[in-house]
Structure formats: structure tokens, C-alpha cells
Length: 91
Image 1 (cartoon, rainbow, N blue to C red):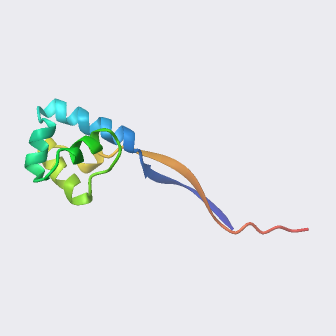
Image 2 (tube, rainbow, N blue to C red; image 1 turned 180 degrees about the horizontal axis):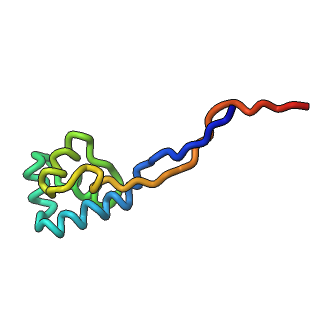
Image 3 (cartoon, one colour; image 1 turned 135 degrees about the vertical axis):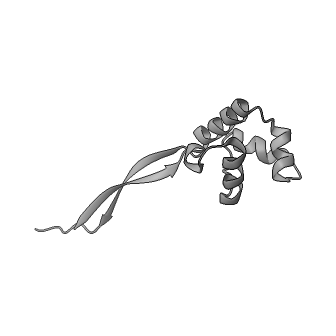
């Protein structure tokens, strides 16, 4: 039996754009986020906004509090079709 379902996958570039948009809407700069998140380097924030990296779950929790939104409103997902199971071929 073969089952097909839609698997959610994180869209890194769109999530980065979303973080950048939320920063702008809430008036939080990359430097302020760096300080709030206690990061030694601002590059971490820039890598998020460029879609190069995704915040860890604990950082997403903090971001959701800073922006006043749910984690689902930060992370942008796409869906890919996945097939599982075995195909039974008959001759």
C-alpha cells in the first residue's frame, strides 16, 4: 500500500523575510535583537534575515515574545508531496 501526504518544510528565505518584516513592524533593529538575545555577534541575526539560518526553537520562543506573535507567524512553511510504502508490481 502506498500513502501520499504533504510534508511541511521550512522555507528559509521566506522566513528570513518574515523576521525582517516583523523587526521593521515592531521597530526592533538587528543590534537590539542581538542584545536582547545575548548573542556575541550581530551576524546571527543577519543570517536569519538573509534566510541562511533558522533560529533555534528556544530563540523562536523569544522572538515570538518580542514581536508579539506566535511561532507559526514567524516560520514560513511550504509543503512537498511525500510517498511512503511499497509498490507491489504484478507481472
